[in-house]
Image (cartoon, rainbow, N blue to C red; front, side):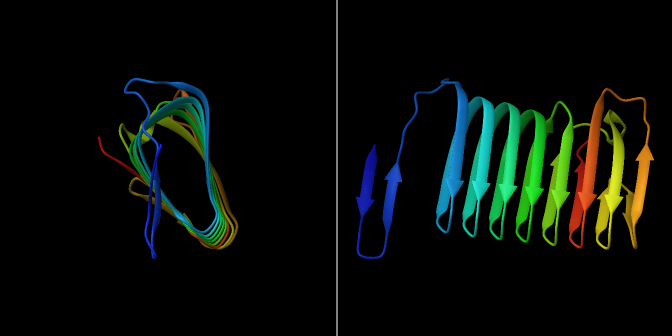
Amino acid sequence: LKIITTKMDTRATIEIPQGMKFQDVFMNVGAGELRCQSIAADNLKIKVGAGKIIAENFDSEKAVISVGAGEITVNAGVSADMDIDVGMGSFTFHGTANGDLVANCGVGNVQMWLDGDQRDYNYHVKCAMGNITVGNNSYGGMATDQHIDNNATYQCKLDCGMGRIAVHFKN
């Protein structure tokens, strides 16, 4: 553990041996900022209130993401299953989801760039007054509730109140 303190800044650095995989990792930021890289865990839970989390290279079997009014950005993430809940904040993800995906968004913003193809998932798209984009398809307006069956292995459930969810594919 390395702690750096100045009048305007306090930083703590925790170094984990390369290749280490944890059973459970829980990251929680209220109003500060957390930057992490190369985290591997069976179960990964990331929660932010009004703060900010930037994660590079995470690998998990199950990722649970919760954003209040803050911001979470994940670059080069890999997860089998992901459960995302965004209130007023924003969640941005670049990476691979090799399992079921659930995203709930109140008035915030969810942006995902996924490896693979739009047809890798069956979809349940539910939108009150917000907007949901999946690949080239847009859903929105008042009380949208649609099921799209691609005969896929994975399920993608997207539920948006007044915010925005966009799922892009890097095929």
